[in-house]
Amino acid sequence: MSTTPLASLGAGFSKEAFGSQAVFRAVLQALSHPGRTVAVEHDVQAPAVGHAASAAVLLALLDSDCTLWLSPKLVASDAGAWLRFHTGCTLVTDPVQARFVWVAQGDEWPALGSLALGTDVYPDQSATCVVDVPRATATTADAINAWQLRGPGIQEMAALQVDGLPDDFETQWFANHAAFPRGVDLLLGTPDHIVGLPRTTLAMRSATALQEA
Image 1 (cartoon, rainbow, N blue to C red):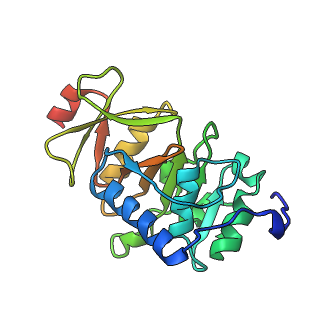
Image 2: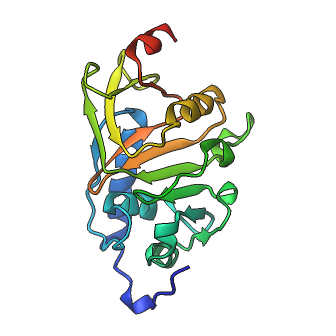
């Protein structure tokens, strides 16, 4: 874990209540409309490692009751100290103990099935995974390498182009979706926007397979 003097940490929201509420609304919009690109407007001095939009999202969502797991690049940076200072969250070394997971661009993801999935009675006790990616853009269904999305919040079908997903993401996400009401919710973060993939969304590479699912 990086040890960073508190005086050197960047500032949080200049107006905490208004700033966190604005970012929280962006998160709700992203999860309510899967595949939609949602801008994250904020004035935080985000850590140097990790996308700023992701940092602002976690700053808005975390509090002293939350556990957070960070991927290796983030652990080696001041990101953990910054979030712990501003939110009071607890950093954990085992991703299964985390209610929130932040993965830096290029770092390996924990297997989604290994994270906290909640229970049928308490599905809200699952993990929210924030993953930095180089690109996550809404597109058309016929775009090359597009993901086709279907589920609540989507009218018929949405399409998304994403770089940086694991090779077995389709398999992992299908299992996560099938576990409903248990399962992980995913936020894909770029430097300035997020895209939501809640567990209720079916995501597949093949439009034909999706229509037949």
